[in-house]
Length: 225
Ligand code: CDP
Image (cartoon, rainbow, N blue to C red):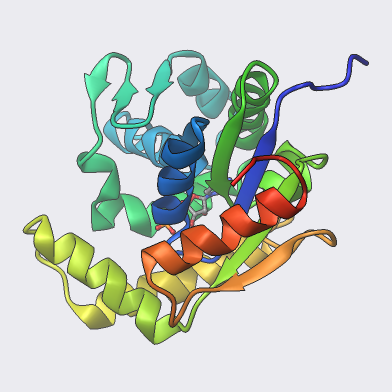
C-alpha cells in the first residue's frame, strides 16, 4: 500500500459540541479542505425520507445509495445537484440521521468517499469515526466534548437564528438520543481513539479552541506558526 502523503486531521466527538466550527476555521486558517462527514449522513437521510426507504430493507437501501450523488464542499451540500444545505439541518433529519448512519451499507459508501478525498488532499474532517475508522493514521486526532446543556443551547441558538421552530427541550433530547445511538451502535461507534487529544470546549471561545489545535499541529511540526 502506498503511504498517504497528505495530512489528515480528524475531529470527532459528541453531537453539537462545535466540531464543525473549529474544523471549518482550522481548515481555512491552514489552507486545508474541510469535509463535514455528518452532512453526508444527513444528505443520505434526506434522500431516504424523500423516497420512503424502508431502513430494514437492504436491497432498497442498496438501490437508493446507487442513486445518490453527493457534492460536499466547504460552503454547500448538493444532493443530486440540488443545494440542500439548510434542509439537512432541520429537526426531521436530526431525528432520523443516527439510525441511517448506523446502517453498514450506508457507512461503507460514505467512508469510501471520505477516504478518497483524504488520500488526494490535506483535509480537516469532522465526524464520529474519523480517527477510529476513516483515517486511523491521521496525523492529528481531536476528540471533542462539552457540557450537554451548553451544547443544547448552542444548537438552539443556531436553529433559532435560522428561524426554525424548535424548543430547547427538544434539542436537548435529540442531542442525548444521538449521543446514545452513536456510542452504542455496532458499526464504528463513536469512541475516543487511543491517540486522540481531548478538547472540552465548554468554556472556550472559537479563537481559544482554534489556537489549542494550532499549537498541537505546530508542536508536531505539521504547520509553522
Ligand atoms: O453537527 P451535529 O453534531 O448535529 O451532527 P453531524 O456531525 O451533522 O452528524 C449527524 C449524525 O450523523 C450524527 O449524530 C451521527 O449519527 C452521524 N455521523 C456518523 O455516524 N459518522 C460520522 N462520521 C459523522 C456523523
